[in-house]
Image 1: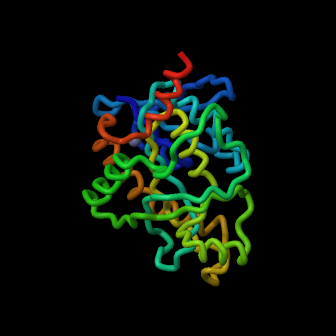
Image 2: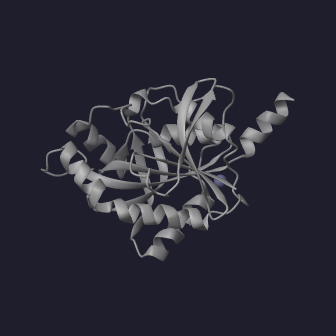
Length: 254
Ligand SMILES: [Zn+2]
């Protein structure tokens, strides 16, 4: 089976032998790293590009997700850094996304058809992440709500106050777009996030790239262990309905 992994830069050394591939799609070229792990084809897609230099609003999301589709990937395990809005979420803790509010203004659809996104993340992959976290003994907050913003700037205090009143737990810049496009392409998608800072106004701590990197670095091994455990536990799609709209649309096109 083929599994897609989407993350920042931290996963290049997830496995020893990862081979670079360029995938050409109608939306642009995408660099992906491939390896074979316990009989599974694993493809790592660095969402911000090979050199991690494409900021969230400028990522070519449609090319990224289409490249995974064209490789024949059915299931995607994603990982992201976020800011914590919910004061109960500590910096350095992991959360499993359950819902999102898409506050972005970017292109976020292939524009072919409408999809049911009542449950935006794959129920089976969420279970995989929950079991993986249990097995490695790492706490994972479930039922997390993400507000997805354009970036690249961080939020104002007033924005975070509103997001908090709306019941949002974390703020990020990428996952709603990836989840929507995955659903349009009929691929399963789930995300674990790492809170690398408190959102502006939630704590007195200043936002800094240095602090963000320090938190990411301190959790790097745990995150890698979690991802490898999740890859171990992933199975072929069974009862989830992530692919239904795409298959219906494909049938209608015939
Ligand atoms: Zn699914």
